[in-house]
Image (spheres, rainbow, N blue to C red):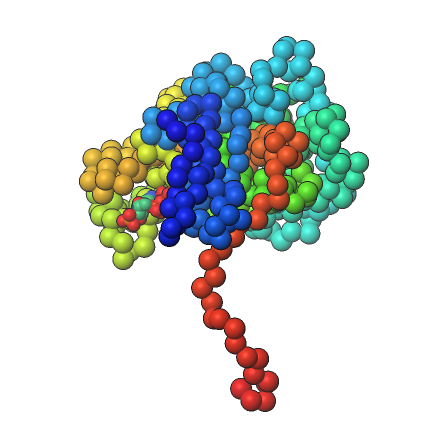
Length: 428
Ligand code: ACO
């Protein structure tokens, strides 16, 4: 294989270097193309554009492979924990027992919110979208920790990372409690990451929540499966904001905003809304699939399709098995699981979905687990954000301090009017 590609424009040829990744992925480096030829490349939605070189997460969308730092997601889901995966993503290797304990202790130490931040929640009207509250609260952390804005020092960065991963869970639980009009429950230093989430969400002044270990493990796996997914919309947002030199709090807050949309993390809410609509209106699954295929109807099968996975999403397989296990072990009957399975069965046999390589993605079954955990639908995307936080932080750090990425600034092909005269107001 040649180490360069040749591009012919008119009577001139340009040799473009080929970059090869560790999994033999090939990319044509066009970074000097404009300077040498005057041309830019156009790739709306960046479907075919590599924005960076990264050593964190590997995906092969054709084969349904997902690995964090080289370790398959199936292995991590079986043997690891969310906190260990957070360490792995950020620091690039599995921690020793001592490193894991220190990292966990750092998170326990920094799980509390300053009392002034607690008062923040009072200014949001009841019913505020939890993703808006989360994004605002994360950004506001920069006001409370000015000493953590300069993250060039590794210890400072580690403290900022631990604070964010830990506090995002506290913020999520507080926003839920505030919305319910309930009193806010402080984190408990004796509880682990996921137990603490249940504690802050569901404990009452007179009674501590005692979640079943099956549910605690299900949450741990769910968060771990969401922990990173290379250059998706929200992660690219985090890297882009960070590339300007913006601090970690501002960058992950922007990631939350990007994740909110229904085509990205918001799909887990949209899936449950869709299943509830089908159930409430008594539409048959076949009829619903027909509606989805009719482009004029303007609806998509939410939780289906992925920009990268064109065979299957390995996370969806694990989550589906988890959802079935959790419901069986907890003896919960959720008709939405049956409905989702029926919908999946019909869609996977339909030519429309087969031709377009549309398969269930991570969001298709995650809602079933979250419902079993007692998390309200409107909080689902917040749960995704809690899980994705280590990935955003690892990617931000890599861009700033490992690969020293340039400020991200795409170009465009301008299609507006050519030079026009300014017409004074009285003459218009
Ligand atoms: N239902 C019906 N048709 C679909 C769906 C779907 N869920 N997804 C894609 N298609 C169709 C499109 O209409 C298009 O058809 P056409 O070729 O006839 O025009 C074709 O499949 C290709 O779709 P694109 O939108 O070009 O694919 P893209 O890669 O840009 O979009 C996306 C990927 C956004 C995930 C899309 O599949 C989608 O909207 N899915 C539903 C929302 C969803 O589940 N999002 C979560 C993704 S996972 C995550 O972010 C965590």
